[in-house]
Every structure is written in structure tokens, then in C-alpha cells.
Amino acid sequence: MIESLYRPLLDLVADTDLAPWVDALASAHRPLTDSDNGHLPRWSHALSAMPDVAPSSVDLGTDAVTIGQRSDLTASEFDALEETLMAFHPWRKGPWRFFGMEIDTEWRSQLKWGRIRPAISNLSGRLVLDVGSGNGYYAYRMAAEGARLALGADPYLLYVMQSLLARKYLPDSCPAWVVPLGIEDLPPPIPVFDTVFSMGVLYHRRSPLDHLLELRELLRPGGELVLETLVVDGDAGYSLLPGGRYAKMRNTWFIPSLPTLEQWLTRCGFSELKQADVSATTVEEQRSTDWMTFDSLATFLDPDDPSRTIEGYPGPKRALYVATK
Image 1 (cartoon, rainbow, N blue to C red):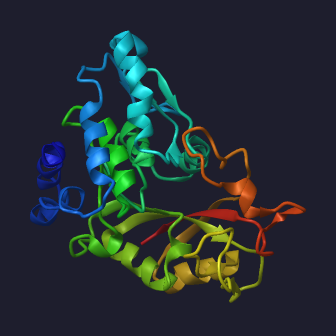
Image 2: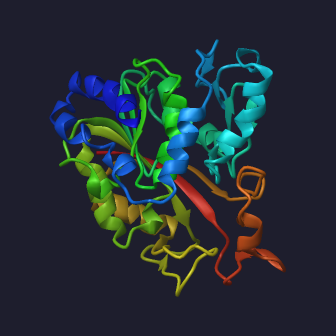
């Protein structure tokens, strides 16, 4: 089933300047079918157990990516739906709405999309890549904006399986996809993407400059980078390297000051830098819910001083930059 869901992606890619990637992407589903991940049988069963109905409507352009309506299902199908969807816990990016069932995700991702959308070039007709896409929430929102291809790449198999829940009900022509690949697993770069997104990834890379160069290699001349990352206060040249965890995250490396981030972008060959937003992350945007019951932002912060992380570092603040190759 999973392999068949990806076949329309190959036809779509073959009709673009990304055509040299077709052979490599033909096997992109294999981490979902050949992996020894012990959760895959349960996720695959849950995907197959989703109602076998044609949704009466689909709306990718609202705050909650919406597939179908409550009236599309019988009472017994709807009663079983929550348990089926909960097999994919934790749900981090969203919200989603499947046949009237609301999935209240950890991140209220529509708030970030609301900051991003006014700051970037119109996505209509563009080839778009979202690195570290998670479950594809943003890719589906990009598709609603008219992207010719909105390709998400994420190595975390649970998130990719979540994205396939929507793909199961979408027409082959829908250009939003998530493949189970990290940026290092993508086919050799071709400089053809009109827009490349990297959101919440840079501080997880041991070499942030190499990451920026990798992103640049994927952009066409004049293409647009959309970069969102953690930042700290400080002068040019300053970045925070946590001694261990940051806000309980193990794999956090360099968190730059705004002037340092701009230096990195410039040194890596980007121009026309535009600082589109700088804002603190709050519990209004990131929190535990019934669909993500693990610790979230409230427990990552110092209970006596929520402007600091539990480890004593400055609390999470994110910057959004748009830059041109």
C-alpha cells in the first residue's frame, strides 16, 4: 500500500527539472517498508484501518488541514477513528481534521505559517522543498498556495506515516509529499528549487554553515531560502553552544545571535537578507495536548523564571529570515 501511495510523486517529479531524481525517489519509500522499526507494523495497520471512503471535501488552506466531514462516516466508523489516529501519537505539527475528528497537535503550526506567508514570495507554480518537514503540515499548506511541488523531507518515520494519512485521500494531482529522507539522504543536489524551507533544523546541525551551503546547492539562481531557527541576544560573532541539553533537547548545537546569523548567511553566499520575524516561543504556541501527552514547553522552562530554560539558558526565541541565492 505504501509503495503505491508514492507512485504519483514520480510522475509529478518526472515532469519537472527534478526529473534526474526520479530513479532515486522510486525507492524513497523503502525506509517505511524495509525498516526494522518495531512500530511500523502497528502504523501500517492503522493506515490501512482508516475509513475506506471518498471524502466529500478537502481543504488544505485552513488552519487545520481538513480531510472529509463527519457526515462521510457511519457512526461505527467515526467511533473507531480516534483510536486509529491515536496509533500515530505523538502528533507534533498541525492541527489536522480527519472526517470531523480534531487533532490538537503540540504545535499550533498555523501561527508560524501566519508569520511566514506574508514574508515569502508567492508559491504559485514553484518547486518547493521543506527540509525537516515533520508530518507535512506545511507542505499541505504550500500546496494550497499553488506550489507545483511541495516536497517535504524528514527521516523520522512516524511523521512520514502521519503525512500518508492525508495522501490516502488526496488526488494524485495534489503536489504535497513527504519522503522519509534526511537532507543528507536526498539525491545529489540539483539547483532547481524555487524555494527551500529550513525551519527548526539549523540548531540541530553540528555544522550550521555546511547546512546553509547544502540548502544553497538546492536553490536555482535567484531562488529563495526561508530559514527559521532559534536565536539568542548577542553581538556579531556570538553564538550559544549549550554544554549539554537546551530546553531538554539533547541535539542542540549552535544558537546564533541575529548579527551572527546574518554573517553566516552572507558568508554562505546569500543576499537580500530580510528579517521577517523574531518572537519568543510561548505556551500558547507549543504545549502538551491529548494528542501529544509528553512534556512540552511549560516543562522545558525554569518554573521560577520562564524567561530561562530549565538549564538556565535564555528561553527559546525564534527568528525568521528570507534570503536569496
